[in-house]
Amino acid sequence: MKLPSHTTVIAYLALFVALGGSAYAAIQLPKNSVGPKQLKANAVTTAKIKNGAVTGAKISANSVTGANIDESTLGRVPSAASAEKATTAGHAATATNATNAASAAEAKALGGIPSSGFLQTNAVQFGSGALNACFAQTLIDMPGWFRITTVGDCKPEFKLNLLNQSSETWQYTTEVGTFGLGPGSSTAFNFSGNLAQLFAVSEENQTKHAFLDCAYQGLIPARIFCSARLAPAS
Image (cartoon, rainbow, N blue to C red; front, top):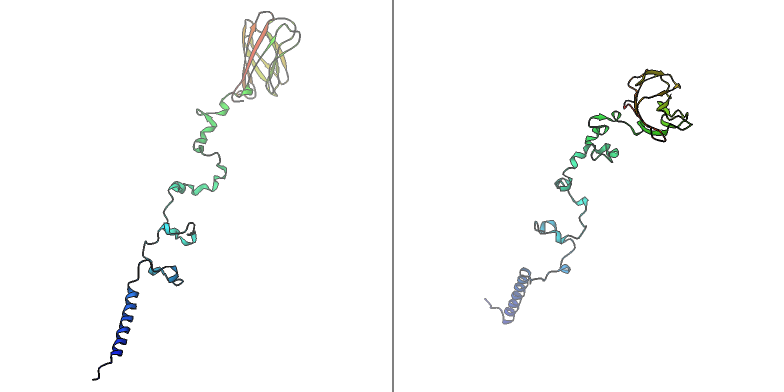
């Protein structure tokens, strides 16, 4: 067999070195030698990314949207622990002031007593007048009930005038007896002593009643002081 020439041997040797060097270079790339310019577009696929390799620090702010999230994998927001009770919130439009409405049923009563069981401010009156005046002075005026005035006869005597302002007949009880007054009627009467009490009740509705207290001051000028209280049921 004819041996290869020296030139042929050198050529083969050069080819071997060239091929071996490029193969080595393809397997052992220098550190930090591959950059964005060496990667083709869409070259990195999902299969090539290590699980857990992409962290929050590697994601651009506001880049992940709701369309990219599987809501079924999300847990309950901590602050929404009590939101399950909002199922019936459809009627909450009128609940602006209902924060403490759980006990609102008791708001119509005070200590278990309904509001009708308390005297209203317009159910209590006080008044006073000079007894030696020569003209009538109004002491108590409760429309629909009665009006009490001084007699106005210039005499300093413990007496007053009572007018029935209601459409009912009233029975009045005093220390001197009981008498009745029809609608629009009036009467004048005297009291003995320095204190007097009068009780009035409607003949048509005996739950409708009132109390009258008067006191006489005999100093100069003599005066009379009266207070009236309507029954809560009114």
